[in-house]
Image (cartoon, rainbow, N blue to C red; front, side):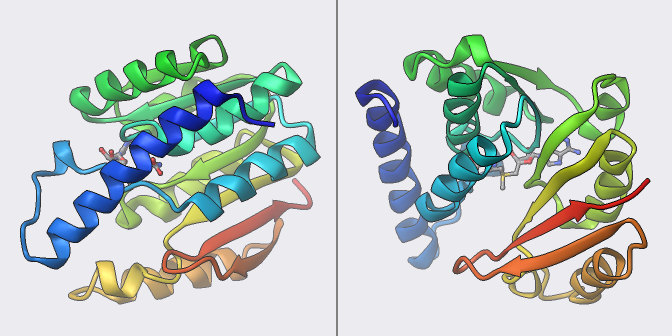
Amino acid sequence: MLSTKIESVLKELEMQRDIEKKREEEGGLLPTEERSLAITREEGEFLYLLLKAMNAKVVIEIGTSFGYSTIWLAAAVSEIGGKVISYDVLPKKIEEATKNLNKAGLSDFTELILGDAKELIKKINNPVDVVFLDADKRDYIEFITLALKKLRIGGVILSDNVLDCPEIHEDEPEICEEIMDFINNHPQCSSITIPFLPNGLEMTLRETY
Ligand SMILES: C[S@@+](CC[C@H](N)C(=O)[O-])C[C@H]1O[C@@H](n2cnc3c(N)ncnc32)[C@H](O)[C@@H]1O
């Protein structure tokens, strides 16, 4: 169950995301540093329930932004006694996310790290329960390959935007096909697309080493 403190920060960020979406529809695209690009509430609720169902204690997030999805992940691990390690390459995003996680009272359950997740994930030692992937789609295959080096059997990689990927990458839709081919033909994994709209979330289960 979410505390009123958590709920109020989530609502604030949802309002911010809706304003951002409206501006975009009207043609006023904000600079990347100022865009939250957050997942939907429905996806957040799913992450929260899945982590609790899995008793996930070591959770990695690639793409923190302002911390909306991090709050859902951290809310779950706060009830289990785990930790979310979340990476973003932009200092402004880590700064904003730090404020939001503090306001939600979840900073004890998160480690927000500035830098390229492709390098940082290599430093993780523990067997990882869940990796939530929400960054540049061009890097998804590399991220998934690196994540699988850390993921325990029965662990899960959740990759966001598998349905709206061709829209995001209009000029290079082959990126999206390559990601799905890679996931669906991976010998160690089974995978299913959860049709949360508009993003689409791919849930990939590690079955063997
Ligand atoms: C779609 S946003 C994340 C939204 C966030 N997960 C949420 O739902 O609230 C993607 C973020 O990934 C970050 N990013 C892109 N490439 C990255 C990389 N190689 N390592 C870490 N972060 C990266 C971007 O700076 C951006 O803030």
